[in-house]
Image 1 (cartoon, rainbow, N blue to C red):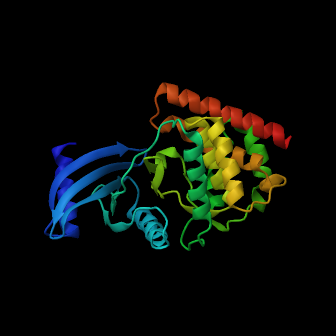
Image 2 (cartoon, rainbow, N blue to C red):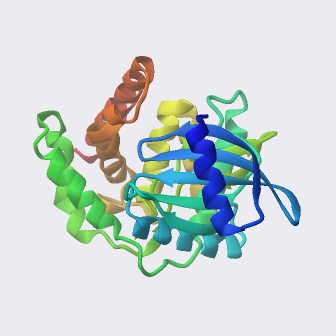
Image 3 (cartoon, one colour):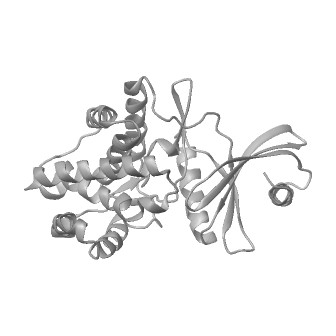
Length: 290
């Protein structure tokens, strides 16, 4: 943590509450578009903790995410409340969020416990009413298909996904990026779901397939199957063919890592495991829809 970051955190927190005295700023990690800091500070109410999330996106996107977080927190979901959003001088934005105790889990020994909780929280998310003002999943998918059309190795995937995309219905609130890196656990208990920047409205199987893919990569295929089985026990899902098949959505979900995985800051080993996992999922899905 540099002195500049400490001063920036102190300045912003004092704008939110003038009597604030910042005691500590801790670097909690950096993603592709965000840097996250834990802050310990004093106010008239005593010692408090919060999270400063600095994003390299326009302020209107932070405001949109803030709206999602606060509505879901009010509904009782395990998400951090957002206390405020500020524009940054460099055209990014900063969010002041609840501190949630816990951390991410690499690959747990008790895979079933963690995979089931991932399924439970996704079912809870999908049970919420859709929100106005969020982008449509089809808008995101169409952009990915346009980019993937220029990648020869994705030709079969693009063909299958494009064939049915006109039948996709945008009807449900989606997290958009539910993977182990966005879920906090403490003593085997799920404490919170973070990073709602990809929240959108779309079909539930798009979210399910994304998490399946991420779990297969991070925790192994057993975790993927346990998650899927548990989710289908919790939620009524009509599976058949085309856009109502899990194979179709596995192919759609595979576009994101295939196109952008090299930009995720992964180690060589992690990137290789991701590529192998995505290729296996694409092969299995293509064989299923053939």
